[in-house]
Length: 121
Image 1 (tube, rainbow, N blue to C red):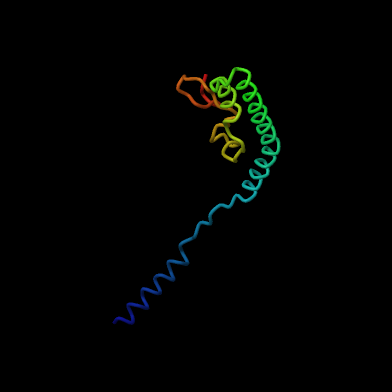
Image 2 (cartoon, rainbow, N blue to C red):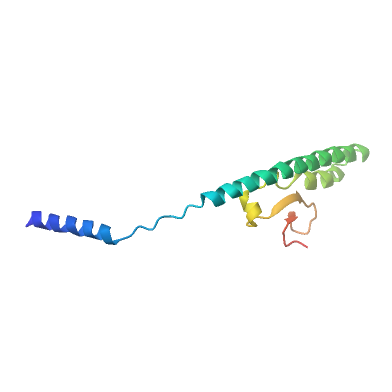
C-alpha cells in the first residue's frame, strides 16, 4: 500500500512537470548595457563640469572669506551651493526617477536642494 502510494505521488509530480510551463524571466541585458554606456558617457561630461564648478566655488568662497574679514556666513553662501549636489550621475537620474541636484540652495525657505526637474519655484 505504501509503495503504491509513493509511486502514485511520483507519477503525479512527473505528470505535473510536463504540463506546467515555466515562464522564463525576461533578461534585458542589452537595455542594461545601453543604460550603462549612456551613464558612463554622461558622467564623462558631467563630472569634470561639476568638479570645476565646485573648485571655482571653493576658491571664490575663500576669497569672500578673506575679503569680508573672516565672515564665514558670506563664504558659506558661496561654498554651500557650489560644493553641494550630485557629483556623479546614476541610471536613475537618467531615467528621471531621481532629480539631478547640480547645486544646493542656502535659503531658509524650507527647501534644501534644487536641481534639474525639481518642483521648487
